[in-house]
Length: 496
Image (cartoon, rainbow, N blue to C red; front, side, top):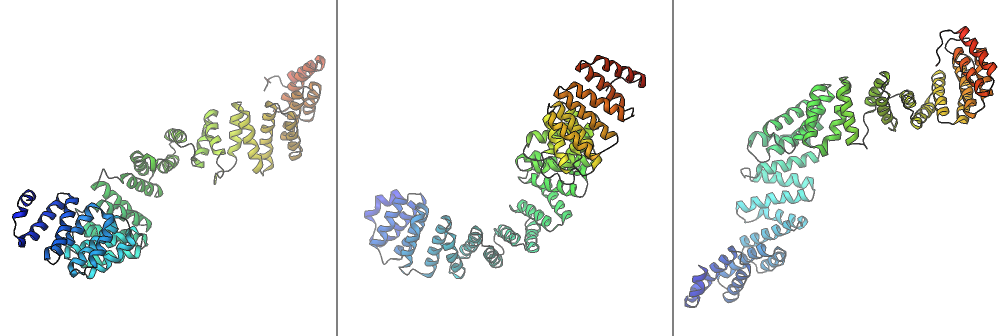
């Protein structure tokens, strides 16, 4: 066509020149030869300004500009409208301008034109597109009332348009953002029942489930998420569906069902759901009293998410359970993690004693000091406090801090002026003298306990310690005498 036109242009009659020029220009435009098309349109407009082909060319040129240089279209349309085109052509030019503004994300100006075109002379197809784009503009501007109004008009005016499901989805989302959940679910149900093969079906199921969750209709939420997984097993939101199914099962105390769904959620999307799912998985295993699985889960979680706290009750249960089995290394691991939680909730501070004792047995003296010290900050029961003070004092001796141990011994004796705990405090005072190298003073302190108390759990230990202290002091005679008394009075004593 173009080659024939170029060959025969000079031979064409004048009456046919304008029509052929327009055909040639349109052909160049359709071949994406925008510069060539522009030249032909201008030639036609200039040479035959009064011909209908020139008026058509002025509009077709706008399409060429829209395709080749959208940024120049707005001024070109304004120039075109200034020529007083027919109403239909004017509306078509306005639509092109609105489309250009939409592409430039200048929705504020595009909205005004799209709204004006509702009452235009455009074809039904173009008015449909304009009405739909108006809704999208409001959506981009986050103008929720505008979205609802625009798509309501579109749905009423063009109920048979193929984009109706998409419009319903957009309006449902706006209703959801406006907290009009009933209206949102109604639109989503229309998509699901009236347009079963719509592209928006998967997203509609997801949004419906989430809205049902917000309405606390947990049973229907779970059913909807299960329907989503049945229909779209490879859905990009399968992890979210599994998580909410698992969360609902957890909250209804169906821990076995919860474990399966929560584990699926974190496997499908570790980045988003590992921590959220794992915390509930640990609690499921805790409530099921499955310590083997829970231990493995907690160890993995502590390695993968060191900055996120394990539920305090889980750490307490594991730690004290392992302590009671004399697995002090495991006990220290979990109770130490519990100690680092600023607000352990309903967990009582008693666990700090177990942590301190486990750490002491593992010779982790800084941990033991810290645990006992923190416990004593909250302890109110005098007997319990004295018990922990004794252990704290022994740690201070092991850490070679006799002055601090001396203060602890004095505090215990003030709390418990008599009885076995008082005797233990006096033994601690003797240990302080030993640590200071005052062996004679230590011997006197231990011997004093043996004289004051006749207790098979205290007296033989006091005699034994006194004999050892005097022996270190070089007072062999007194050491031998006390050893003889020990064996006479307590022949079965083997030390301790």
